[in-house]
Each structure stands twice: as C-alpha cells, then as structure tokens.
Image (spheres, rainbow, N blue to C red):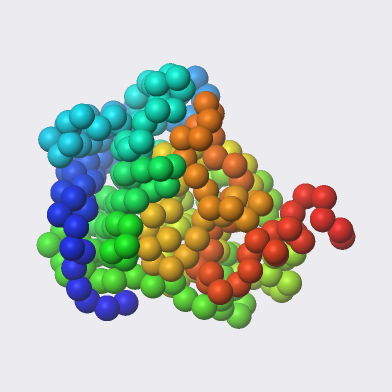
Length: 277
C-alpha cells in the first residue's frame, strides 16, 4: 500500500456520510439494544434504522434527485426500478448478526450503481474506524481512521497456500469447490459482512467463494473496492456480478478474487455443478 488521496470529491462526500452513519451505529452498539426479527427472520436493531436515516439524509444532500435502494427501505417496484440508469445502493448495517454478537465485524455499505455496475463504493467498519473507498478509474483506498492518511490498495498474486475468506455466520460448505478451484489446500479465514472483500482488496486474503443467498446491497460497495484494487467478483459462469437486471434483488452465487491473471472462468467451469469429477 502507498500513500496518496482519492481525487473524487463525490467519494469524499460519501465517505463522510458513511462515517456519520457509523457513529449512529456505535451510539446504539455501546449501550443496550433490542433485537427484532424481519419477515425473513433476519435480525433488525435500532442501529440499522438510525444508520438508514443518516444515510438517506446525507445522500439527499449530495444528489437529491438520485433514487436510493436500501435494505431497510421498501424496494421500488421492478417496473420503476428497471428504468434507473443511476442510483444509490445501500446497506446501512451489513452484518447485523455480527453486531448482535458484538464482535465488531459489521459495516456500512454505500455504492453508486451505473449501467448495472458499481462505479463508486464506500465500506466502513465502525468499530475499527477503517474506511475502504473506491471510484471507477481512480483506484481503491483505505483510511484507517477519520482524518488519517489515505493508503492505496492493491490485491496480491495468489498465495501458496491461498487464503480463503469465508462467512462467519452464513453460507454452505465451500471446501470441496474451493479444493477444485485451487487444486490444493487453502487457509480459511472467517470474517463477517463485506469485510471479506476488503481483506482481498488489501492483500490479506486471496478469494471468497459464496454459495448461498446474498442481496445486491450486501456486495456492490465492496465489489467496487475490490475491482479498483485489481480484483474481480464473478458469478459461477465467470461473468462480473451485475446489478438491477431483474426483479429479484438476490445475487447469484459468486467468487471474489484478487489475482485476475488467473483464468477463474475456466476454473469455475471445471469446478462448478455438473463438472466431471
């Protein structure tokens, strides 16, 4: 990593909104809080809702006419949403299960999506203060705390043995498919929320295979960070993960990688369902 600073004024503005949302989350995290259950049985706390309010207000102050798609707000109907060329995609608190466990592995995710791809992304870990930020064509950056210098991020060449980030609270068993993809043993590194992508972006992990459901707001901001750091997020057909292409907001299963010199699409074809044993 090297020192520098992101050039985008928009990225700095969104980073400021994320830090305000992070403080709202910490105000709840540091006290007693109740846990409710949404219709899908996932947890909801006052911190999710407080961060949502801060982010909606902040983004409205940056670009009032731009629509916002968020986990904690009712999604616009597909008939309306399919016509959006540009919109904010937000998870006010990604990793609520980790928040409830008080292990610190949760994030604020804010992405700007254009043409079905994230072109700006901010991921904040409120407990550590680490903020990851990226904009299309401008690189990916880490700011260790508010006011700290910015460090440019780059992914690394595939390590030996590879380090595979994985979900701490979700997901199917990925061991067999990872073995097929890598042809060797790997070192597992469990982590909550979108921080798994950030580990790859900063060169501390090599890949993250997700088998099981995620939502578009879970991945977009961190995908932008990883792509601008030199990595990729691919569906299991080997194509880049895309957004707002259908009525469902559930992502396909995917593979996030740091070393794009490897032909991961070919490896996915060999390792995926229906491949020869």
